[in-house]
Length: 332
Image 1: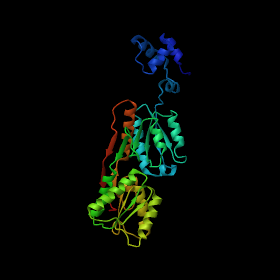
Image 2: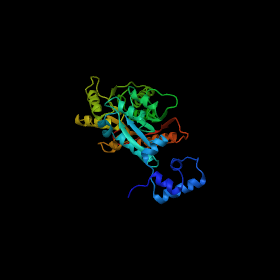
Image 3: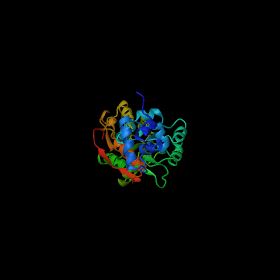
Image 4: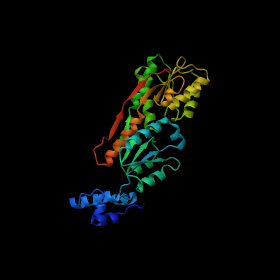
């Protein structure tokens, strides 16, 4: 069955094509009689507006981009992203918008920036951004943007949804101190990311309050492989081994636990380990991981809600900081 055209709707309603277009696009400059006639014709003919034509008329795509400046392997291998996307998707299903995923790494974000700046989407959510991701600024100049995590440079009017990374790292480190650890190391995220920087800060703050010095601060790059290399360095250190390790993500903690197990180190008896995220990784490792919980699903929902409010012209908070909490299991 062929789809009814806007011209057929206009003929059935006894109005002009432009009047039908105004009704379809929500204009208020239509008489009550014409509005009723057009709506009746739309119902009788089962008319569905052409989305491409409607986009041209309204200059809206009804699409939002989720932009992730990471490579494909990292995106699909880290449970953090799966939870965030699930939260975004859950909120988007209650709207008229669709979600476009743009993994922007190979070309420095040029394609993603070009797509957005050429009108491909109405707004964007950007997560896992680094201080050297210059294309992020070009996107933020083109469409409304919500940042998952604080960007390296915050501009007036930016919308940010983050967790309290400093407090979370303090919680995890303090737990190690409270159980008697005195030689504490951290395996951190990259220092080109605010989450990596803030979790090191929380680790150091907890040690300072306890009158302790860090045993070591090693960058694990938020990857399992990077954390495994950091753990090997810790075990090979000339000054002995740490007795507690705060690891800035559960994925990295899994790599640390693997190295410790292979070296015959007992966890938590010899070295206690605390992670960060409370992802599925935390309950699927041996021993079960004590970790700092951040609600990644909630972050996704809130980011989508803020952007949808901005696009609808509603008031939205410029900064939302979600709480973290310690979840104690077997590793510490």
